[in-house]
Length: 584
Ligand code: BES
Ligand code: ZN
Image 1 (tube, protein in one colour):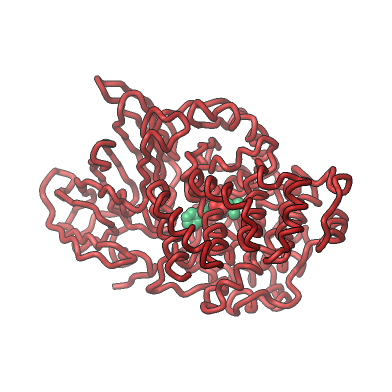
Image 2: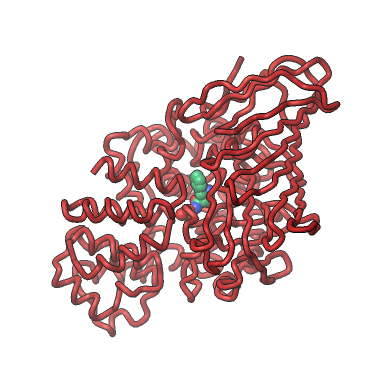
């Protein structure tokens, strides 16, 4: 027996699943999916087949002819969930599992009408990365393996079901509607995704439309209007787009991430709707995953940087192509600052700040940080500097082409680099990034005239004239560079002059509220409290709750807020805040 992914029961001596046929009825009353998953194996085989499940009630398992197969659901382990072992009879190539999900399924968030923009209908969405697909479908939940699928979702007639797949059709029957989807490209299971709600869509370009609740649709369409230009820029950099469509889904505010690269249908937080396109680099990021992550995939969470480091690199290249070098340099500098902050938090777990991680017994959600993103980005920038941009661009296209629709490990990646760019890894000291904690000395830093101009204001309160052409990213960087405890007088001056507490840009607002809360500046309190009640994006919950708990008074407030709002947060976000409150 060989389990090659520390986060899956799947065993590489067992047959591999080739195809999934999934049928699910969405029951908002009981918050369950009543479902049937048919797995078609690559070859007929006898013996055990181990699948991943979490909190699934398995009712029956039958073969392709409908004859029962014996199975055993093992007691749950905290991180992995329960192993479902099915005994295959000789010649069995297909099996069907009938089951229902738990109301607490870790991949699902069930929203009440009050938690949506329209306030009229309930909403359901999935978030399977890293290892939550198993709470929705019994399968080999490891990114080493890829499946094609077809799916049929039965939902209340007044709702739409959208999936990260190709739309086949909708049929209405009485009070219900059946929506059919098909995913012809093979995907790792963490990219299985769907949402059900009161949804409408608007065309953005020949290959893209945006979905949202009707109340936010126009704002979303205006914000994401550049998506087709992004697609074309990305194809020029990384090669043809392999997924046919790139649609967007604007999520309810409790969505725990900024974006999720679900293939053909990227999920996006509504906090991107700043009104001025200033946060669309997140769209560029999720689009970039179409190559780095979705096409070429990390073999397990231990190699997560192969997904995210490459994607941040690719995102900044798209941003550079569309908005210029200055903007990309600003983003790189913001990223560097955030990485340095993160390293402070990981002082007790230096090993998690290496790119190559070892996660046996560690929950990927707990290990999650900016390190694979920003240190991974620095690794690739250093490699680019070692060989020059032209050579690196050629290497990148070659890497993507060679590994398309495959997964790989860090070790397989470095072996590939060594073959294609001999000596380059040694030249940039790859080991320092991959296997040693912290930021390697000599890591690349960004430079630009605008950055230099901005640096002159560090430690000063600028005048209205000074800031007249500052972009939100420049404001963000300026605020990030304020001392963790800034004198109240300075904060008051800044807010009176620039109304930062009222900023409509979530990045600027959260950076500002974070420093204001840490500095004990009362007027920030009310806006922070209302924001924490509206938004469930973990990137914002963590610093705001984290800033609150730095004072005894703030700690009490944080506890109270969490008591009031926990229900609104996604289970993953709830766990993250809980751990901040516990450690405080
Ligand atoms: N794939 C990630 C989100 C994710 C990572 C979900 C790990 C679950 C587990 C997505 O592409 C992402 O990185 N989102 C970022 C935005 C990005 C611009 C850094 C986010 O959510 O903030
Ligand atoms: Zn990403």
